[in-house]
Length: 356
Image 1 (spheres, rainbow, N blue to C red):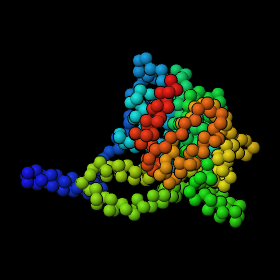
Image 2 (cartoon, one colour; image 1 turned 30 degrees about the vertical axis):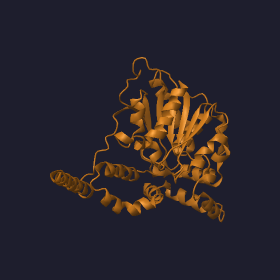
Image 3 (spheres, helix red, strand yellow; image 1 turned 180 degrees about the vertical axis):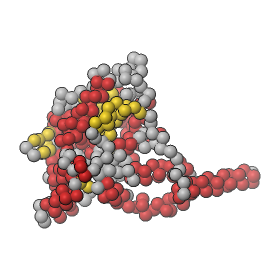
Image 4 (tube, helix red, strand yellow; image 1 turned 60 degrees about the horizontal axis):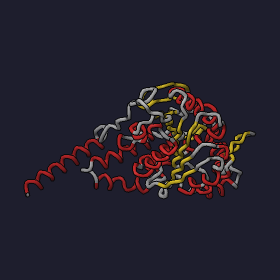
């Protein structure tokens, strides 16, 4: 019995030492092991990938439509494929669905004139058409996270002829009246009509990647403060440290927003809550969420501090043209919603199966 304890202690010390070295002087705890994928097409801010495991026609006898993963801006596209056990992309592929991802690539100063319309009228519609064509004309299920879910809904509302079968919006802010801190921002903006913030964004061409990363970390300030203690407490737990490292890798890869896009987000969404009213105004043009005519699944997180569950649930009142709107909740952070296997993934799988 004593010998077993000595061996176990030795193994624990050895593991802790390796992990400490990997975190300080090495290359990290483990490789993220991205799910293998093939580039289908490349265009500016529209690289389309198909996850390997299915050919263009899918497995024999399968008639499942394709799934297109729609990331938000200011987040790396690999949010859907963080690591093998935290990969919605791998899960969808392994359940027999042809799974695709649209990657917007880097956002730079040169992209400062890009706005919501670039995604709603070009990037997403063309990606949807290409995915459908790659699957022999089948309809496409859209799965969007955060603002990606909003973009998916607006795209469907703007063009009902697109080959879309359904939309799943995870952690999507569908009412800024429910967003933390927005009320205070509106109070400050009333002092000058929001012109100072708008002018600053225009001058800098957008919100830089560095500012985006700082803001994201600020939403989990307690995690940052507890980080040293967390590492020390879990130094011999390789799996836990690997998950921590995955979140760090995600945070360190956050890109920025184009200037025009962020000013639209600031003016039309944060200040005026167009999305919460169900009709978004882009200049003289309007897009109404009531024009979404396909089934919708909404997933909100009661512990999500970036997009409160109530902001997601609000879609039940605005998506009035959809034949079916389901609302479910899942535990975890904003990012954690994407890797909630027993809730988010289960809801999504059932939703898509019920459509067949």
